[in-house]
Image (cartoon, rainbow, N blue to C red; front, top):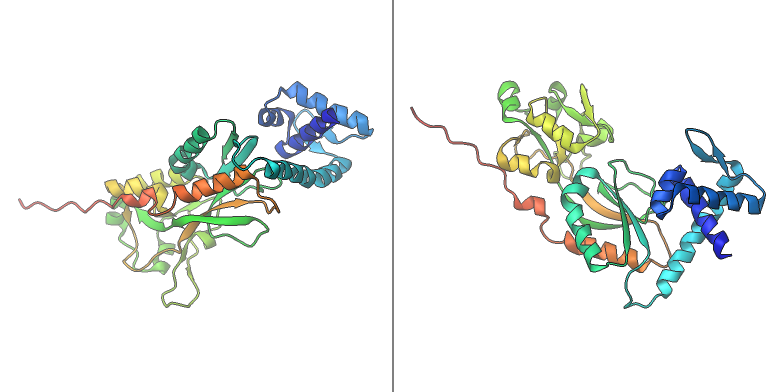
Length: 317
């Protein structure tokens, strides 16, 4: 049974990872070992679970049925074992996380580093990806999301607010002028974010409290799937952007970017959340990580400690 359970775990990981190599990396095993374990399971059951080609590995119909049955059961076993562990014992096992690239690299990495140092027996797998992946289907324990959450079955804990800023380079502002209102943005060069529809990206607080948010449909010639690339293009004068302040705080502080909209016109704010699959018994390692994240981002976020640069004073001849 021990060997069969390892075969099941290998099969589940191959389906989630989409291949033997990626599954082996997640399990800490050689590709050949993972392949052998899946083959052992297929031989024991007398059915083909995976369809293998030179380019991909996908589950068969029987494989899909088995995955959908076993995946929640194995998660339940893992959670039950973890819940039964001594409350004061060390955190063990593996915790898989995903987070947006820019936020993760700049602000999350030191937080996770501190947690890893405090819990040396816990394995942590951290993937940076700006796309909102299916954390249940992909086998993640936890994800960090920046934005406004949509309805879902996931559990969520708010870590902090995240305001957004419409900005551009001083050179662009001097050449093209400042938009007088939200509607004027449609006449300006804008740089859009590929992972979010423009109608959701360019949403502003209502002019009158209680009204619907104001939305502008832009027609951008440049669309990028990374916030830091958008920032750098805006600094180069290619157009106006709207981004979370945590990506552009340094550029605002140095004066490389300036706020583009008149006072009082603000984009709808976002928030940063920790989201995780619903479970009756939240694993200790997951609860500890979520608590650590909440404590780390409580109070004033680090990007708000920076202040925008003051305009340079003109000198008399």
